[in-house]
Length: 274
Image (cartoon, rainbow, N blue to C red; front, side, top):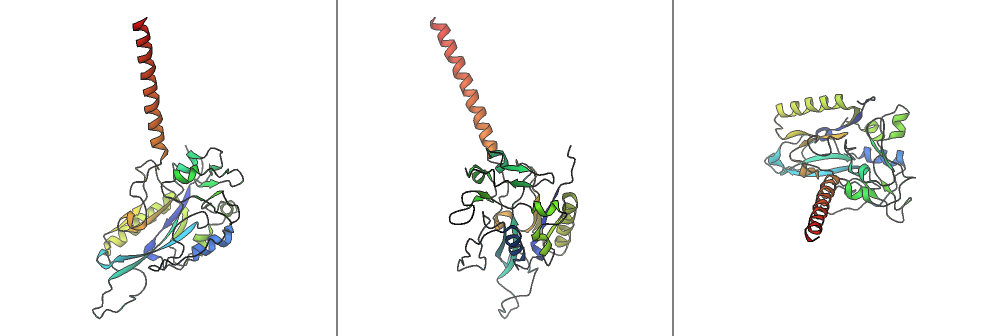
């Protein structure tokens, strides 16, 4: 029985304008270093993905027009027939703070802990830089910081602005979001808000709107869930995320059963030839 109120993020890309205010606020508040911004040549996305020095990442996605209508902003290209070949979709991605967190299970030093509000926090002064958490995250969120950045070798990710929460403040990213694309609050309230928003969009003709909140897999739910337009893969989200350690457990079980069978067979052979 949980004796605290769990909180989280609900991120709604249907009202995201791609301003990256959340990225800037996250870096400013948490003193996250600049790891270089690289243009890919085919996208306005200059951070690329989440990592040790990018705790909030605004995806810039261009989807085929036939997948749905433009929701945010005006049309950017006049083709003469009034139709664009694509629609813009932005999504501010972040650590999911899984209910069953693979990074937490894999950490051998106790550096990664579950806080009283349900978030998953890395205590960097305890981290030994082993990297087990990196390969155990089903979302590819956590990573080790490379040289020559400060605290190189240690694992870093979103802290859920735990220090701000302890002072009664909301996380920096949610505080600065100008369109309420990022909303912070009680998980129950956020899920109700998300469900209502999906219904509203579907009634308006956006039939591909759905909530990304995997509760039927080994992660058992996430504390940062999303409204998405289309399939999860379009946003780089696994459709059925699994905590890698569940396969380790089954492997140990199989190995143990094999060992027991071998011992029994050896004892039987010894008894037979004796």
